[in-house]
Length: 155
Image (cartoon, rainbow, N blue to C red; front, side):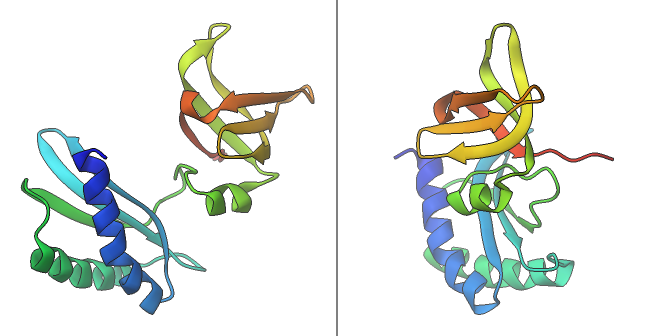
């Protein structure tokens, strides 16, 4: 397990009781380096949408727990937020909620000179994701080849 995965896993264990006590949903935890700074991001949601006040509740409680356990070596910035419209589908519950809806996916490597696909999410398992594209054809992709998959949205 990498340091990043370890930090994410330990943070998820710390934040889960806070999330459950407030009837929120934990969408994701990520530990990433951007522009020279480390960020520990916790994405939360709830029925009807998450508010700034909800994020503050989680942030304050989690910050205290993180200070107490002190398992992250580097300096980092804690962010608690809504996953937003473009949130990636990562967990089974994300795929279950999105079944039958239009998704966009981007591959790490092109297939026939194409890396971006969109279609209706038809099936998934631990190894593959299947979508139905415009012509009614079903395409299956190995999860390991998918850089990101998320709900498609139109403006």
